Image 1 (tube, rainbow, N blue to C red):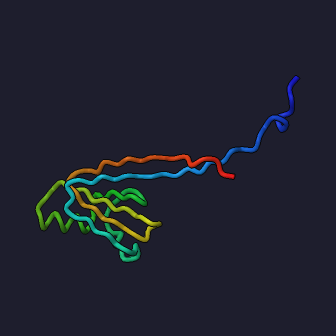
Image 2: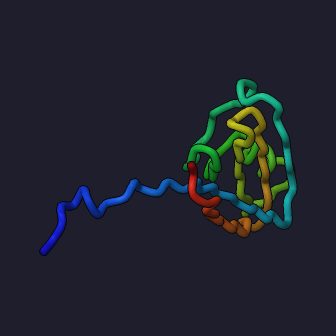
Image 3: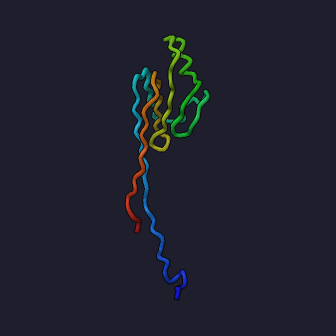
Length: 107
């Protein structure tokens, strides 16, 4: 004979999960760190929120004119909840490794 579902169901287990990302940039021409995202110019054409990939930006345009380099990548990372911003311009796309870790059951 079966039992009622409430008699066999336990409390749900809740787990803390964190995410980490590692970015390896090579052949960089510019690395610029901003302390405050309020100072940023949001001009340009980009995809993404906390990790942006720009297809057009004022910084890219300036470098194209100064160095006459055609193949450049512009990335912008927002760190520390957006209070630190890093612009990276390089000749090669970065290697990106994303990991998710379970930290065990929460009480």
